[in-house]
Amino acid sequence: MKNIELRGQRAELIKNATNIVENAQKEGRSLNAEEKSKFDAMEADARGIKEQIDIIERTAEMKKELAANAEVREAAPKATRKGAFEKYLRNGMSSLNANERSMMAELRGTSTQVAGTDSLGGFLVPQDFSNELDMATLFTGEVERLAKKLNTAGGALLDYPTINDTATDAGLISEAASVTVQDMTFANAQLSAYNYASQVRVSMQLLQDNAFDLNAFLAEAMGERIARATNGAFTTGTGSSQPQGIITGATLGKTAASATAIAADDILDLIHSIDPSYRNKPTFGLMAHDNVIAAIRALGLGSANDFPIFIPSMEAGQPDKLFGYNIYYNNDMESSIATGNKTLLAADFSKFVVRSAGGVQMVRLNERYMDELEVGFVSYARKDSKVLDTRAVKYLAQA
Image (tube, rainbow, N blue to C red; front, side, top):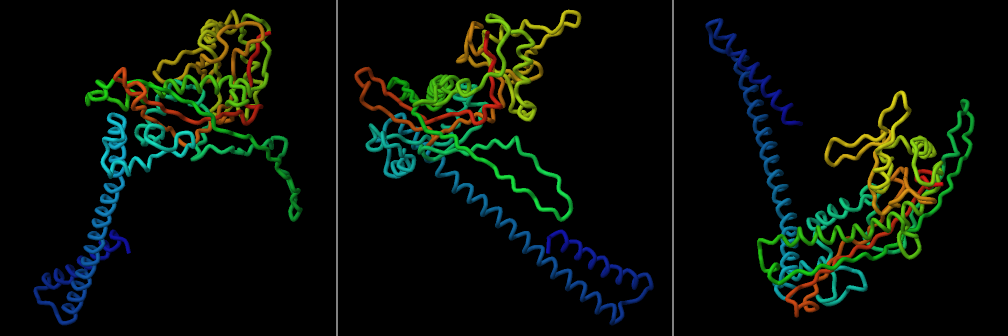
């Protein structure tokens, strides 16, 4: 029984017992035998319920204490692994004690090209550092930030199931009629895992300076470098021994009337070349190079009722709007409006998948730059990408 119910029962017993005494007092007499028996029984029941309440409350307190202890035990290894990783970055493996080495062994990478000794081996970065690096990566790499993300432990070739069932509807059937079998046809999009690496050199003087935030520096520098490389691949990668870019996998939605200009009607036709089932989703948006967006900004609709079709964002971190849809900047797309260029993308970005395999790994190069009193750090990530549904991802091509 719940604590609140027991408290209600106890309050009712106390009330009834009190009424017995008060009624006798009003009549100016003592309790008779029957009243005394009822009072004693109610008092005993109330006392028994109070003991139950005390037990429930003490049990709840003990559970809280156990949960708090469990959180401390869970957090302690994480904090210790983070500390061991930071110590490794600053001073190398030789500076770690046996316990710290054991914790670093838990972070040892499994990639075959880095397995082995400290000078060659890679370590999976702790979650806190990985989060910082991911933030730097996603801030620079707009395509990955918008895409559907798939994280896997390993990098083996992965078959990602896809389906095109838009031509099949549910049927209206009469009572007791049989349902027509409507089989679905599945296809597979194969995703691999391609290596992207970044190397940074840090002076020994900075490494020995505890005021220098090494984690933040490495996360920002390496995250931005990896993002610049992968964003290009996620945009225009060929799909052959490298990721398939979203432009590469997209289909033609509209050919502009001009080779050197984009008209408002071109944009509207591109948007409406995509089915409303994709277009009305919050993951739908437009994308172009900064130069192309700058040209679009000047466009208006009509002459008598002229108004801007491009609305700049008034809030930091929020995208600008084009015809009411989010528009994103991607400087790995075509920078000029010229014959044949794919200048503007319209997409439901959830139909473009980016796979990350095995997490980010890092290697400390102890000796390579020691003659310059520097230490090298190499981080690498394995990624791939592919358009899952070409009907949801289309581009504008100049005439």
